[in-house]
Length: 123
Image: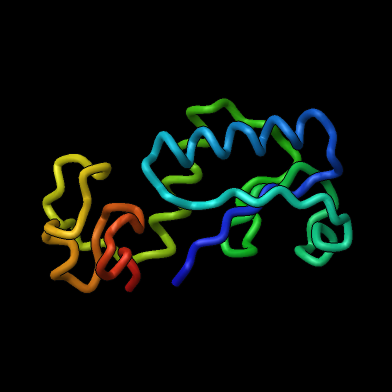
């Protein structure tokens, strides 16, 4: 399963800041995921939310109408991304080192955040 992260908003300063913070957090967590910025109001309404900014993971809003601290955002993103996979724990000491020789590639799931070249962490 591919994880899709979107920040949806009107283009205001708060929406742009959430997009920037989300990109930073995703990078700091070691997830190789794109953070899409969407300004199409109809897409926001289609999600069933009426205020922005919106942070959605796999089209499921996890944050609506607020700009959290970077640490709060990091916790939300990490939990939400991990909730989209079933993790076994591969024994990697450093998720950034997860590569072809990693034991993750021998399991159906891993905790490298989708960085494996083998299973990519997908269940």
